[in-house]
Image 1 (cartoon, rainbow, N blue to C red):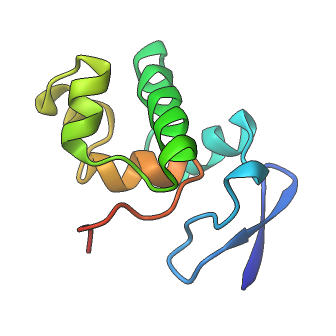
Image 2 (cartoon, rainbow, N blue to C red; image 1 turned 60 degrees about the horizontal axis):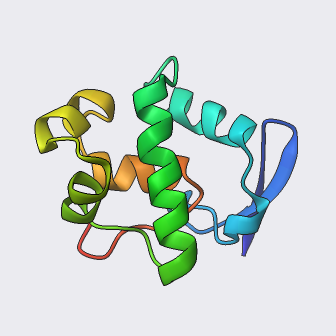
Image 3 (cartoon, rainbow, N blue to C red; image 1 turned 60 degrees about the vertical axis):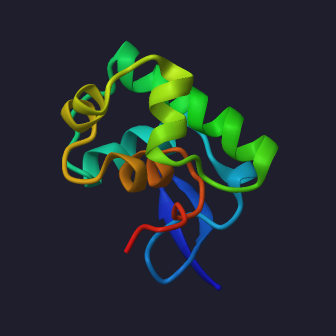
Length: 105
């Protein structure tokens, strides 16, 4: 397993850059990963989605699907694409310190 330093903390990642141990995640890491994904600043709406995904992912053991995110947060798919352009489920899973969602290529 590869390691990488993000926001001053060394974490385990897979070959696609997803963290493999969600317990290593911090909000500072989320901010850095968001910047890598082209999101300059995480707003309250971003954190609402990230917090939902972390809560769901930690309890289920896998990243939530786009449908689960829209249902759980009350945001529309359009809203999620505005917050996390070009693949919101995959981007928010990575920023949330979770594995790649099932069905994402």
